[in-house]
Image (cartoon, rainbow, N blue to C red; front, side, top):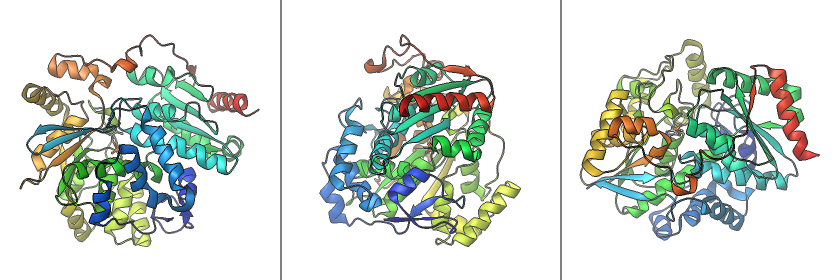
Length: 467
Ligand SMILES: *Cc1c(COP(=O)(O)O)cnc(C)c1O
């Protein structure tokens, strides 16, 4: 399988290249040159497989010759072995046609583990083949950093340094990063905001000598491998509910559009998905687009669902590329205008195509809290402030006619104990395997917002592990 850039000015690459590169050189996003397709008989043959075997089967066409199938199967087996539920991504029924799929049984209790646990192992495999190593640097305000650290801790070919804003993350989120004690993991608490952390990471990547010296790399949400590793759970849910002989719908609480794009990809590969429902919080750029073709940037406002607090949904570019019949020139021009003016010019024809499959929904903080309370009163189920937006969206936009609608449950409610307590009076407990999170020793360096200091810290970590 080869990959091309959405903006058409980068050479085609194979999966291993795309995994290591992240973004294409022309600023575009990598997409498969052609979409793999499974026939109904292929889907039926996957029914009843253990999750890891199904995941390997669904990902295989995207990986092509880069990794032998048996190796991929073992990587998936190993990646999901530590999950806290034997089914890995279990379905929970909330109503006759309403389900959640719990994607939060991984080590950091959020759905990002579903892809990240595979990614860390894919990196190790590909870097071993090439006899090289990388240093992953990233900024986090919450879930991504901890999932990346858990995925990379102890890997031989990867060092990882994550910057978080000092005293500005939740305690659970910070401790999930700082209590991982592996020699290849570094945590920097930067004196500044999340934006300062992001600017620092950008500055590190912009410093070419430093970038080459430590071989900087990233695992952010535009990495195609993350999308590929998120497609299998949609397949697993649909098969369990009767696909390919019955349609399903998916509702996804959305930020960077990575998770819902994976659902779209499953549909593109032949899974019978009747509808995709996009849930947003007050940062509602996607809702505004779907509602009235208004894709315009406004400043981010904090909400009860911080992992959906985004200004721009970067993975939307991949969908737009498809909606524009894969015209890279038109796509590049659209993105240029968006960057320059803050408003994306989408023709009515393309907008109608988007609305043919996607339905938008938005819920503010008051609505989020009320919906958590109401669902709990009705069913006893505790949905975290992200998941509940997906559930409310599913209730508002389910296709009806007996089509089951599955909401991606993206985080464990114990990650957001304060919001849960305010809504329901209950403080959900951490799963047993994590119950000692608040007793574990933390390791992190508080550093000034100064690039030389951060570079010295990264060099020290890399030097320790590579000499
Ligand atoms: C990252 C995240 C999201 C948003 O996912 P995208 O792929 O960015 O759309 C939603 N909920 C939780 C809990 C997350 O961590």
